[in-house]
Image 1 (tube, rainbow, N blue to C red):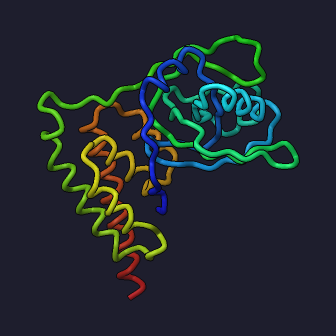
Image 2 (image 1 turned 30 degrees about the vertical axis):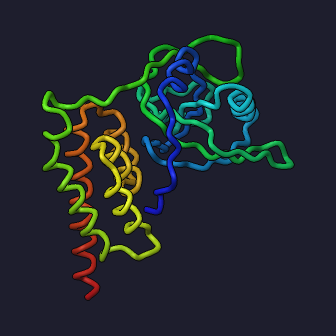
Length: 231
C-alpha cells in the first residue's frame, strides 16, 4: 500500500490538448488510477518510440487496459474504453536503449476513436472524463468520506508498518476533494484489476466513494478474520 508520494499539480490545460492524438501504452492487468505514481520498464521498440516522442513533446501518455490478456502480444488488442492519462515525471534511458519511466496518473480519459497516423504505436482521439458531483456538491458526500477515513484507520493495526497505511491516513487528512480521496485509497488498497477498473470507469463521485468503501470494508473484514485465526 506504499503508494503515497508527493503528487505534482497537473493542470487540465496540459492534458486536454494531448487528447487530440493521445499516445497509448496498453498493458494487460494494469489499471492506473488518478493520483498514483507508477514505474515501468519500456523495452519494446514501438513503445520506446512512443516514450521518446512523448518526452520530446508534451510528456503525456495514456495507459489503457487490454481487455483480454491473451491478446497482449497482438498488434492491436481490444482496449477497455476508459484509461488513466499520465504525465511522465521521471525517465532514464538504459545502455541497451530501453527506458525506465515514472508516470503520474493525472486523470481519466475516454478513448473515442483510434487514429491512423503511421506511427509504430497506437494513438486515439480521446476526451477527459470529469468528476460528477451530486447537486448539493461535496457536502452531500460527507458520510461516505467519514466512512472512508474510519476504514483506513481500522487498517492501521491490521497491516505492517512498512505497508504505508499510516502515511495513507495522513495524506487523506490533508485532502479536501472526495474524488481524489477515493482515487488515492483505491490506488493504494485495491489490487484486483476488475475492481480497480470499476472505480476508474465511474465518473459519479458518490458511486465511486461507495465502491471504494465497500472494497475497503471487505479488506478490513478479511484481515480481521485472518488475525483472529492466527491468534
